[in-house]
Figure 1 (tube, rainbow, N blue to C red):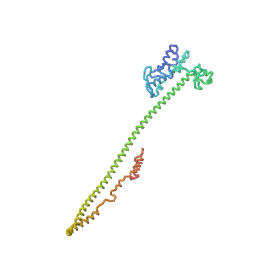
Figure 2 (cartoon, rainbow, N blue to C red):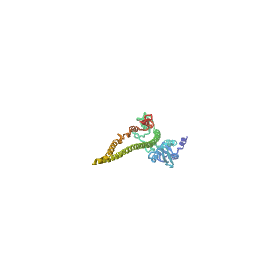
Figure 3 (cartoon, rainbow, N blue to C red):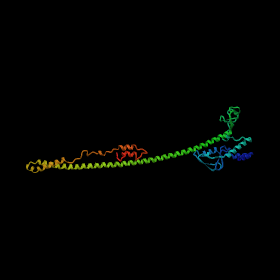
Figure 4 (tube, rainbow, N blue to C red):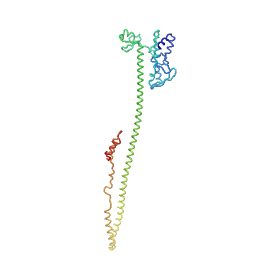
Length: 347
């Protein structure tokens, strides 16, 4: 009903000119080229012109965005489909079709879609004076009327060039819409991949930090144990050295006493008077014999007293355990078995 009423309004030359102005795109200043999109402010644009305007404001092709209506400067917010997400104005497209039919009926040459796109209809390569005005459906190529009547397409199925043009433009537009929707999904996947990459990096950083803390704890435990064992070795060393020095002092005192006794006995032997020698000889003889016996029975360190072999530490099993450390190992299972035989006995 709306289309019929609109068709009845198209009549005089003045009304036709007025209608032509109403059907002109504010960007290209030509008659709308389908598909026509309607903005939220109710102004219309060729989708191609709207796409060019949006691309000039969005050179990096981000999904979604904002551009201004060229008529009223109203800000139009686009979703991730961009211009292809705008609603088509089918009423205006139908009015354009009716207008072109009226132009053809009045003998005026309507603006063909190719002219609106900034080009002229090409001429047939076989019939140089004939315009390409039909479409061969069988071979899927545009051709001229003479080719259909006399030429290579006389037995082919043909269709009006305009109808095929509009159908294929609509098909391409739908394909572009599908492609844009697919691009939106790909963009969502890329965003998800970026988020997952960031999560992997954050988790790896935390895992490295925890691993460093565990090894720092191991280093600290090993250092503490080393200090304990070193202290035990030092204590044994001090005790043995103290015992040896005590014996050395005893031996020194005994050596000094026997040296003095020897000197006294030697001086007694040098006396010329027999009476004087005999007065002290018996006592010196007893002292000398007693001193010799004591020297032979003096306390001595046990054999091997100087050795420290019992402080040897076997670390092979610990080294083997450390070399097998890996992520996910059970501290109370595999590692615990390396420490004992399962019955509470240490290896």
